[in-house]
Length: 127
Image (tube, rainbow, N blue to C red; front, side, top):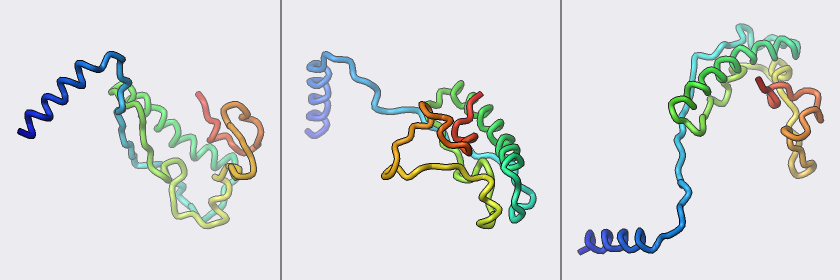
């Protein structure tokens, strides 16, 4: 009886529905790679050296994102520390960090105001 009710309800809802329905799902992919680590994470780097290090991993991300899109992925999840790595000290991580203002204090859209902060090179990375 339950099966019949479900099938009947499905047929009725299919007949009643006249407007197209947007897909309520998407294709997601999770990506992880053997990231290029800073060989001395406890030694502070210059901002330029940190950017060059992250660029190596960004290059891999861009290549893999394109491959995932070709395979139908609509959203791609990358590892949390996949650009810069891990095992840093408080002082050695500072060259890798970018400004992200407190949304309670300031409204900033990096897409429309990319030059507002001078240390958002990775955040505003485009190819």
